[in-house]
Length: 448
Image 1 (cartoon, one colour):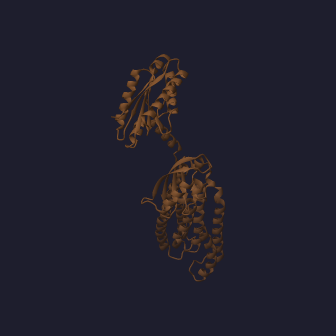
Image 2 (image 1 turned 135 degrees about the vertical axis):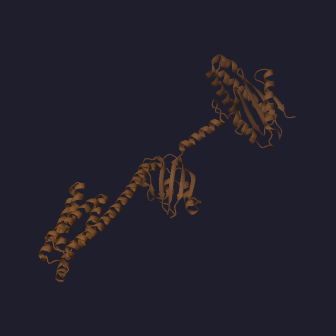
Image 3 (image 1 turned 90 degrees about the vertical axis):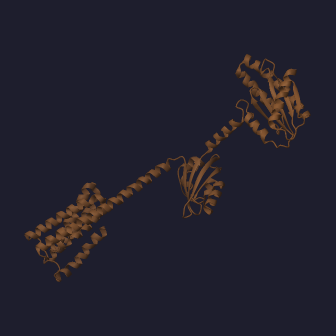
């Protein structure tokens, strides 16, 4: 816009002699017109230079005033002032370009001042006109109305653009703050599967700063699991373009971590990644899983885990159960306290587990009762194991208690097709029979 304004000066200098000889402008002396035109150009240049050094409000008024008045004295000197009122739109548009929507009202106001001053000069004979005075006034009024409409349109368009720009900047600032300070990672992956953007959260996740990730293949930064899933997502996206997956991030730049990711495939083949660290969540899930299936005191499988293990056994296997109940544990609890009793239970559980082979499942049913599940064992082997367990428990009791500790064991040898519940009931009955015979005994009950 400024280029258009400043280029009109030299063009006007060239056109003035032609227009004057053709009688298309008033008979104002040509040197006067040239001097006015040069003054107009210099005043606008001065405003351009002064603009950065004055407050915005002052700059708006100064630019509008100089543009309107300097143009006014020149066009009215040519006698064309009333006909060129709409030309003030160039100055208003330039002010709006520099100062935005706030400039259209001052621009229109100063254009009005210039027009009124020019029409007054025509009326009193100080300014020439190429049309009759009455027509000049009517033309100026009508054209100024059009100028007002045009100026307001320019101002509203600038205001709409400013509002849209502010909204975009606000959204951009919100997005920037949200991404910059988010623990989650947001990344952009190009069609070539290289990272074009990654948020600062990547440093906490893999120990690599964002700037070192840009331009590298995603598999190099996030690991082969991520690279494979993203390549598959790009090659065969789902209908909604969103894929959810989990990755094991073992990149070597940080400790290994688990991440959950949402991969969004865009129409141009690029992808947006939303990655969340779920390492702590996985650890908590594992801890809850361990608590759900393991006895909190002994660390052995609990009743629920033992029940599941029995139910999962092949129906055709010959299973033998050892139902183990401690002798004298109540006396230890009552005499030495529950804290010492807990220690004895832990030692008893470790003693039982130390006597069995890896294929045998040992767990705590509750209280001072334990269960051993022996797959493919015959009664004779079970009796040998029971004797070893009784000796081990007695030794553990001697180390941690002044009171005697032993165990009564019921052995239930099953046949293929025996229901686990019946086998467990038979082992329980055998244990009670062992208790009736005295401390540190075992009894075998085979299926009928």
